[in-house]
Image 1: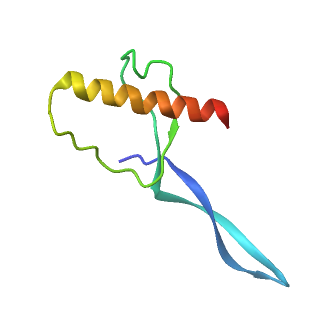
Image 2 (image 1 turned 45 degrees about the vertical axis):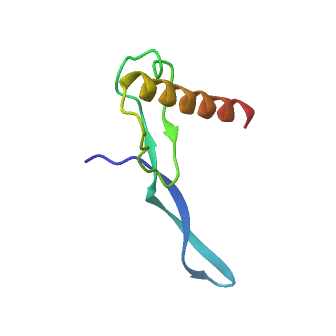
Length: 83
């Protein structure tokens, strides 16, 4: 498995009076990249996530799942534009 994840600063020591920080990838913050050419994800680059989990649906119809996924990605894109 090839994991891409955000790096977080971790205090690894002390140099004089200054703390020393190194960056380590954190598997709880994966960066995901769409691998399909679907209209929902066609123009997305890598997506930063935090504490990713599955999404459970009450109804298991493909259309409902696709609409929900589109809504989530649209919100992610809007957040990226505003930051």
